[in-house]
Image (cartoon, rainbow, N blue to C red):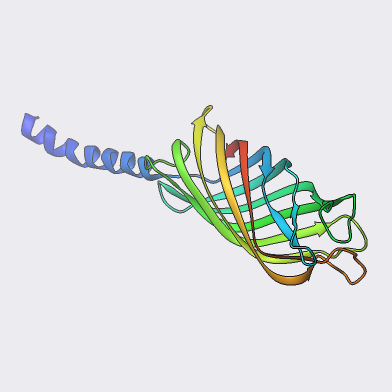
Length: 209
């Protein structure tokens, strides 16, 4: 067989191999990530004295489900939860207590990997959804408000299916209340606010499937 004929016969195989390699390079994956970190910031205002009522910083946990969009982007369903306390010592009338408060974010968004490959390197993440404020005392009521988050992170591959994420996020919740926020009718403190912001630094273990 001549060299020319060998090349002609080999060309379809080369093209198929090239196409398969391109498809593999563009292939992406889904992932579940468990996070642990620290969340701080956030405050409300006492409607009687205009004094700030600060949300205590504390540990927080989160979980995300990342679904493939293309080789560099994923759609993300994100849930974050913090158990903290609302400092009411500056309220009028004075209440020398810390009110237990749970803050939960449920957001739909996505991430974009700067280097163009999902699962490796720097990425930008964000989402929109709801925040649930749930006080731990009977005189206060839970509230649900719209919110968003925006963050940046870095993902370190640990093998074929696992990786480590280091991430920082900022949260903003639109409260838009002139008074009575978190109050079920029997609470002493009259809470109000417009926008509640928080910041979080966290580390996550991501498993691909």
